[in-house]
Length: 173
Image 1: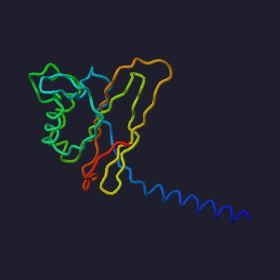
Image 2 (image 1 turned 90 degrees about the vertical axis):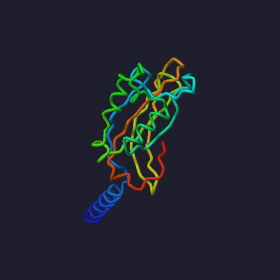
Image 3 (image 1 turned 45 degrees about the vertical axis):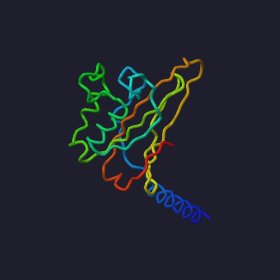
Image 4 (image 1 turned 90 degrees about the horizontal axis):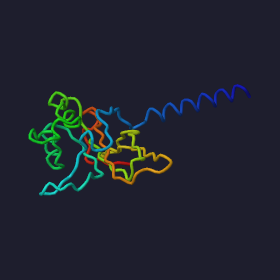
């Protein structure tokens, strides 16, 4: 009887090891994380410069040219020397991402908005399923009263270029 239990235990451990080895998650690091506008959140504006607010969005960026185009689309001041926000923390971080960075790495830009200041977002995982990259976000809301102020969150997630070769779509889950 004891022998059967040991064999069953070993079989279970082996199965768990096999399932863990099949994980489709990829290694990532958070290159930048910010809550609020103080450090220079991406913000979308209309032609008159009127702020429309941050959008919930995710974008995979694989080159400096793509990064500059995305910053232009979202009116991010990282490459606009005449902007008063040119020297904020986010702009500085974006300008650090040069050709040498993109030779090995890719960037996932995640822009979120929280309905109040008590909501906290964290990146749980980055997974690939066929041709889609999924960024799993954990949302935690603090107990008690929080100001009902739309609060932007910005994540710059760094991944290896080899891990995203055949990616056609990027989604938040």
